[in-house]
Image (cartoon, rainbow, N blue to C red; front, side, top):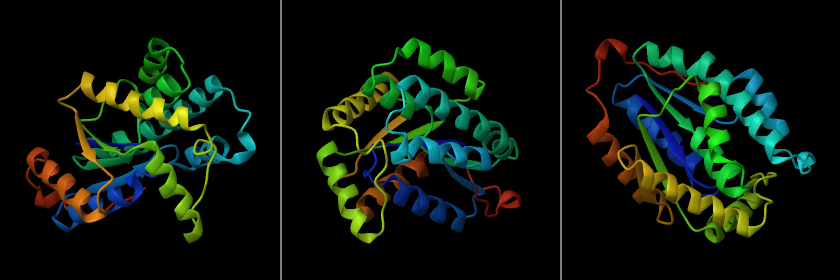
Length: 219
């Protein structure tokens, strides 16, 4: 099963994907946890270019192609092999981020984005997408607060508030278009409450544990 988590930076994705993977592994599932951009040696190099503050002059089309290049490598090197082995893949962001950020946020043509995405992924689609929904004002405040604890402020965080509002609305539009794949969760609540709802959702969707496949994998 291929599960993706989406949401704006500051929605709590990194915390929730980590806790979710830990719980599922403890229950005997073979879980691989990865992220975008990154997840491979090549992807991690692209991530530095994409998110670094030195890249503030990057054009949205260049941004799109770099994200897609990282995604293509991740799919072929990491995601498909693990799914082929019968495991569960949890990915912190996938192509819906491209539609939300480069499409609705930057205004790139969605038809073009879908064609490029299909090429990059070979048509791979998540089985379930968990959308952690939170107002941009709140998510950005979380990001700013995290700086005091050693957190990072990246190039996309630095976009105008109007950009982040368009991204959130884009996510709402995407979720409404595919209600069977998407599950929207209020991420403004305490971490434990959000995690409880995520696990409740997964319990209804996941197949029974195959004991012979039980193990721990990460990328």
